[in-house]
Length: 150
Image (cartoon, rainbow, N blue to C red; front, side):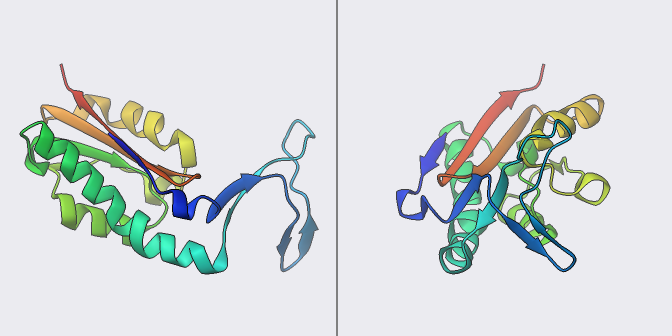
């Protein structure tokens, strides 16, 4: 299940761009020596996106997916984007999953690798009949997939 919020298209982007910190400024470079793209959340529209799409768009979308399949949060283990503890707490309260499979304290925000890392680390402990993976991304998209545990 996916939804694109076109009005927020430029609110979060990823590109090669100069970055600034207290003791450094320049273009980040990866281990291979090539310029590394970074995320940018726009100061005005980014706050609105955080307070709407990220905060409530993700649980709204997951709720629709669960309803369409006749299941509830109690039937699922949930893996989501793990950008902040505040979002994880809010999403958990909204969706009430049987288990929330995350590693924020251990690994922080893993961006795209959040999902395979959490699936791998928690694979042997999933006790629910379903796993839901829900993501937010640039563009601005919210996507969720329902997996049956076998």
